[in-house]
Amino acid sequence: MVGYPESLTDPSYQGQILTLTYPLIGNYGMPELDNNKNCSINYESDKARILGLIVADYSSAYSHWNSESGLAQWLYNQHVPAISGIDTRALTKKLREKGTMLGKVVINDKDIDFFNPNETNLVAEVSIKDPVHYKGSGKKVVLVDCGCKHSILHSLLNRELEILRVPWDYPFGDESFDGVLISSGPGDPKMCIATIENTRIALNKGIPTFGICLGHQIMSLAIDADTAKMKYGHRSQNQPVIHSQTNHCYITTQNHGYMVETNTLPDDWSNLFLNLNDQTSEGLIHKSGRFFSTQFHPEAAPGPVDTTFLFDQFIEIIK
Image (cartoon, rainbow, N blue to C red; front, top):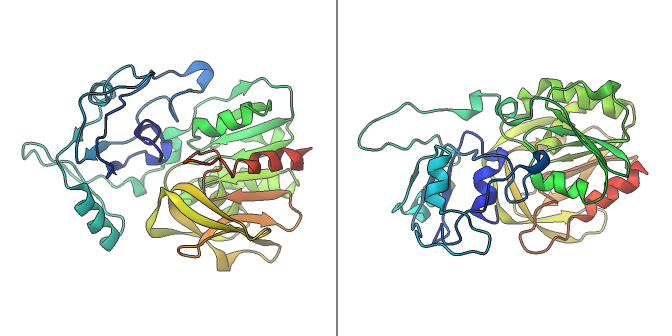
């Protein structure tokens, strides 16, 4: 979203072919693929999540202070095919005209079948399999991992919270905790039936809950609102959103293909943020203020980090 190491490992791209329009891809190489304490410093997950990479110009000469290898070698080690020399701007124009399309990479005329990730529970593929506990001195938060970017985990750890990170379908209702954060992730939120039900239980108990990206959509389904697949999706770092409480505009980074149907919201819920390009919902808030969500990524840093205050608000609500 702001650099190819982040995008290649973002679980929200699970099962997809990624096209990069920026020139000179590969010019700063790739850092070490670490996963210290189940939380990588350099990447958004523990491995590549894309099925293929398409670029216009590949730079084989790389230089960066923390680069460990070139991009091509890194992709080879991750078993991800990549092709260059493609007019990615023309490809992007076609996608902008037709909307999201299925694609495949055919090499040496060896044809393959199309793979449709929309028919797969991608969240089950990217979520952790067993709970992980992170010690902290602050309040205890259950982090529901639907394909959680490690930047979200860092945002919580940096605020000294105690975290119980659980799989997407984990019944966390019997755990002892102070708040719930439902993470980002790939695919259709309606496939996350167990997550929706667990979220509904938490909301009914009045437990402070924060949803990010897919978590925003799951929260909407838990309150009996509806979601729909978008023609294009939002996958960029310059999406303007307006904050309903202050009328302030923020420039956000986003990566999602589904949206919340605003006209299906219950009366005690309203939009917290609204997209200024297409007027889609960018966040919800309950009238009590105890539950809220964002469609964009407040942990991301496409330049300014001016929406990280949402994590601080979450902590204040818990307290």
